[in-house]
Amino acid sequence: MELVVYRSKYGHTKQYAEWLASARNCEAIPLKKLSKQHIERHDTIIFGTGVYIGKMKGLKKILRRCKTKTLVVFACGGSIKDPAHEAIIVRQNLHGVDHSNLTFFYVPGGIDLSKVKGPMRPFMNIAKWMISKKKNKSKDEIEFLKGFEAPTYYVSEEHLEPILKFLGDNP
Image (cartoon, rainbow, N blue to C red):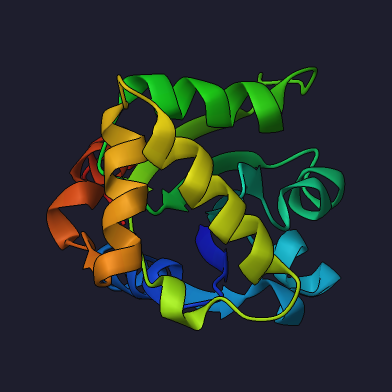
């Protein structure tokens, strides 16, 4: 039996979690509502979270609480699918983590930098300035800069196909 757990700040990850839960005929709940009983009742935990400055929020909590469960983890980032970017996310978040019960996926979300407030705003502006000065920008960096001009939105059910294929035909 599966359970979809998510942490979503801007709604992209929540949308993917709801689509997954519907496709797998299971429940989707926010990470903050995850209880010990939820974990005990399910064999597989599908966890989705956004990527914020390279970090997958809530991942450590899921890893700590679901050590004996099969984990399918998906990161929802602000960029299009880019293997180099995915490798960085894996290195920054899963380095030193026991991968024996974990499978990782990346799904593109989007960026709306107008929603970034507080202390994060100056950091975003510094990143924008630094990236804009680079001569050879990566695809990810180009997409990041686009987010300053207008929100980007890459959320689509088709991005869930590799996860659904991995999970198999039976919900």
